Length: 231
Image (tube, rainbow, N blue to C red):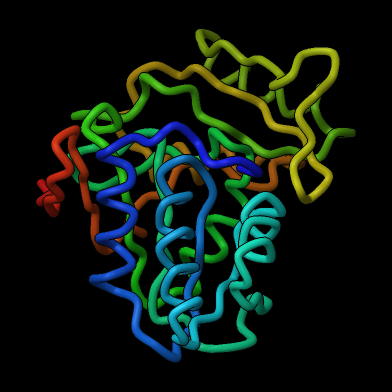
């Protein structure tokens, strides 16, 4: 995110719309990580440059770097009230259950989403699914515990395919942990799976965000933005 990505009309439209609809002057907001939220950060930067007093809690070092580059003031978690957090998702089910963590920032993303009074999710149509499970589920783990975590997941779900993100050169999160990508297939009960995984010693967080989203906004290729109804 050091350089501007190729403009995706839908991503830019929904990122801008989320900021304009939910962010007020003088507030602190949560800012997520990823190519859709990039445009929300850009919109916040424009409003800060115009004189508005907006501060942000960043969900990753990547996002923090972009905020510093664009002079968006940064604060720590719970230093100020946070009326809204804006973030993307890798999958959004019809009941608004999410898979997040494709960028490896799932732990901080979930912390910010839980603290915010309102969690606004911004996506484009390819992210919408009826049931979670096409996108592999990111699981953040303590590196030392990797063999144990893999063994325990495989014991109660022998059909799951587990890969270490980055292979021999593992992806290291901003928290110093590793990410496992777990291919469970169809996830009918995401909340139950999240609880089961987090009960394994060594699992720090999962990319399942169940019953956390308050609003889901979808931007399409024509630049039109709509609210996704919860089913």
